[in-house]
Amino acid sequence: MDQATRDLLSRTEPALRANGERKLAHNVFMQLTWALLGVAALAQLFLLVWLDVMS
Image (cartoon, rainbow, N blue to C red):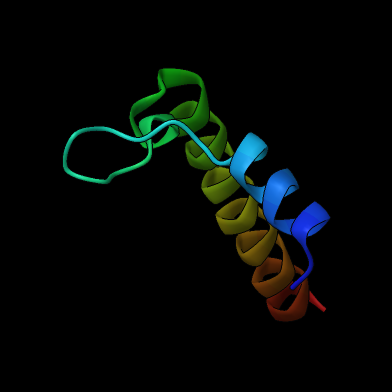
């Protein structure tokens, strides 16, 4: 790994808590985003199964 890559990684590393956990993990917006993604995936799975059963 060259020096430019190391510099870029050190400038862009995420903010960390004292225990090493990323701060973004407790961001309400990120939690809501993942929850909506999960709901959308479950809804698609339900619709796929429903379409298969109804046809």
